Length: 264
Image (cartoon, rainbow, N blue to C red):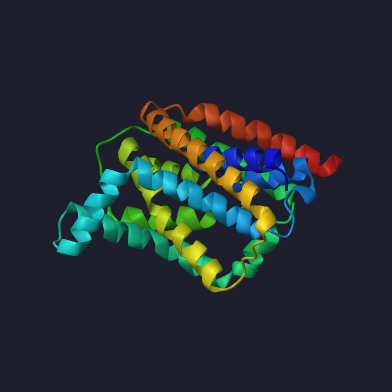
């Protein structure tokens, strides 16, 4: 993998992890456009590095929230911070179950299945379109809401379903405040990303060569910086009900991907 490829894929990951357009779907499309040789055997390591970069950007943006959550857990008082941490834990349950039981089946979907990506992008577009028309309320995310949103996160393991799009849309459609919905959506994925990274490291599935250092570093920086921008921007967009633009984008890219899958 050369430097240009690592920058492109890093920016794609950083932007699409937070913007509701499916990071996994765009990475699959990016690999298809750049060619199979652009992401060789170190693909898993590169993917892990990019995901760690976006998780780190989330930690930076929400550092005050995370500090309060950790403080609430350590005090072990049933306050808003501890309740929020419990809700995060509840939201993780569906994704953890699906990830453990169907890991191989899910991985098989990430093999250049452009048709599936296109179809799932259309689903993402529909969710965003509906969410943008939902009435904004002041309702916080409840414990029951957290589990339902967690189901959306599990479904978003499919390439082409935007995780942020699915979780934020579900939260908004449940009547939650849009800003709180975005905050919950971005924070709920951090433990899953860090857990998956730990699993890959402990499982010995990652391989590293000295020649990978520069592309990995450049990709990490590109994903981290673009992630900081996208996360901040997305919070503003959700608050202002601007998701329709992304719905149109996902519909267009989805249709292009479907056409490409039949003509390539």
